[in-house]
Image 1: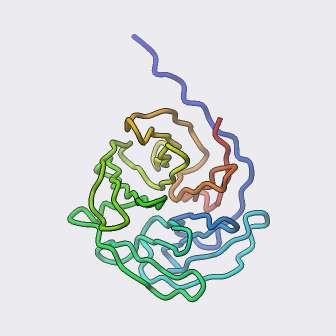
Image 2: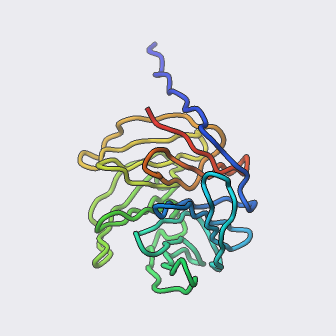
Length: 212
């Protein structure tokens, strides 16, 4: 009987205590981390070197992931779940984007170039949409508890909560390229240009790792 391949474990490069208790999304704005918490209903701007909270803005009914489009923050929030786009300086809601009939399954979110991606955790599915008109462009299979999302180059990376995985998908073929184990139970995910950061829900940490 063939053995399952060993999944390599990524070492923690740095970590710090999260400001809240219900860790959701993470995003990188080019200088700072942004983190969302469902208990406080706040989005926190954080210095990644020190872990210090520099600012916070309210976002009612934070649910899961957070993203940054180069100008504004995108948060999955509300009942039913929807995407809420906020100005990061003043916190006002600029637009809301519905998530369709499976909205309560929506978990991961990322924005890049002219597209955005949404992960549906128990459907084991990631959908790609046009920023222009929200139309569905592609669908990608994923692990059952897909959580945070991030696009790096031609790869779509995601965290898997229950198996503690960081997984890389090829955006061209939709096939899995690599996967790694990470400490804790990861939710939100972002890339700062050198390393991945994720929200470790079970340990209440914001953690950085490097892929190999």
